[in-house]
Image: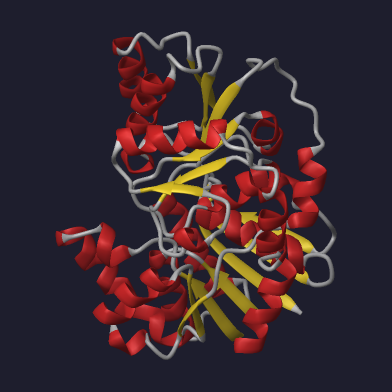
Length: 359
């Protein structure tokens, strides 16, 4: 089969991680093409996706707009292939891809889109209007629209009833085979002997300010603990200022972008997701694969249904601190079976089989 995956840029957020898993799975037996409009980051996690049947095409290293124009020209003058499946996970890209299918600049048997967040909860005003435009532009050509949680599906079909027949709730997948090998890699730097770990872009919606304040409140009872945060972003200076104001300058470590998070999660005393709002945090599944002690805010639907995780409402450092303290002092040995069972049911192979069965 021929598989096409279209992505705005080579950054590796949650949506891109999902598409990379899909690409990796299909590439074992089928031809996979990945289009990137724009080279956003130098450290490209897609480089590990290799093979004679994998083609990656980057349209611009200057801007997403230039890359999009070059992508359109490529479709007009060069690309005449018909694909078995096209996958997207970005509202703008899904809308544009649907339009190109309408005017026959793209051709496929089945088009699968995935919602990356709860748009109608997260956005308002002019930004929401722009999103709505792209939904109406090309979503009619989607054969299956994946919603990560029931909450995401309900807010979507309530706002856009024409999507109801296409929208299905399918939990995020995880690539257990890849994780097993990555988790065995050795870290090339020393870490604190005991630390709490969190990971994600340094943006307000990730709730790191609440996490740092929660960490400060339990630090007296756990003086040996450090807090390690993996990820880059615009909020770094602000978060560092919060650390200084709480006298945590030497206790909170901003590690920056890390390509392989699994050894960090494995060595941590506790893994924490502190987000305010998510479609569904892929990092939560990654943490569960490596560690028995996991705390998460209820930042997305269905998290409260996962057995073994300690949860609390988002945006409350007091409740987050209580959840962290409880998990640090609790015997969580039985969580391994619970987590492994849950993750096995969401393996990427079963995920793809379910999608192909639905379309």
